[in-house]
Image (cartoon, rainbow, N blue to C red):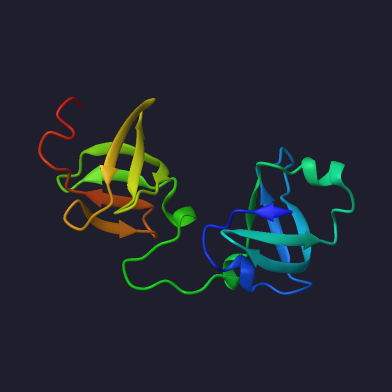
Length: 153
């Protein structure tokens, strides 16, 4: 299968390593075992022991391949994996609740956080001075939005 990786972690996995599929309708994530993985341009060509024909491979198109957390490289200070941020409650420095971080848009310069406030989307640049604090234990992100960004709240 050809996979578009988010980073380099999947390419570092060897034969016998297990990965999980996100996007399946099953309660328990499906597990796949890697036979081989090699880079092919920006893509990663991966052979899985559990997929033996094209129909099985087609069945997982569009799903995300996830690594167990203990096999991810450690992050630097003030650096987070997307899965750690998605779902955080977003509040202002004054304590006003903005909403829940639902997505991250990767741009050339900096990421942009998509915050859901009762079905309405607000986009917040993920830059120093706007993102004041991320507290994973409290499941909360504190922001100081630029003037005008949240005027219509």
